[in-house]
Image (tube, rainbow, N blue to C red):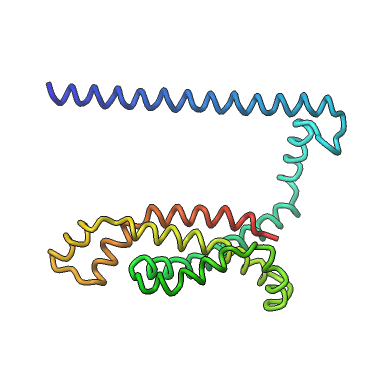
Length: 210
């Protein structure tokens, strides 16, 4: 009886979740249709393709661009740059994030520098990167990596600081050393926050492509 009751509750919960997801998708579709309708109405009223083209014209231009070999080639080049910059951000941000999350001394020594550099607008680095790295992919990769490294650092620190002390105590009670605790406790427990930082870094990297 208990197994049947639990199975029924599980099915009921799954059904409620499915209905909620369907409802959310319908709402999103209605909002999207509403935005397109308002866009079309405003474009007709303004009657100026230069100021506000119609949605149909934008759709045709999008299809034309998506099938243009030159645009696809440039898009692939941009994606490679973003990926490289993202990898550089991870290579720098993850070690710093784990170091600052595990060591209060490192956090006190580095937080001031990181917070100061983080406040500088990304476009302010453009002249310096051109002087340092010249014309080419260097300045672009530097700015993508620089803009993405801070979300990685901050979210990694948050992930490490958010680990319950019970996990550390349990690992120590079983004889685990610092390296074992780092590999088997710290890294797995901080992965969700690290992934959040990585997702933010990718998004910011796309906005930093110049």
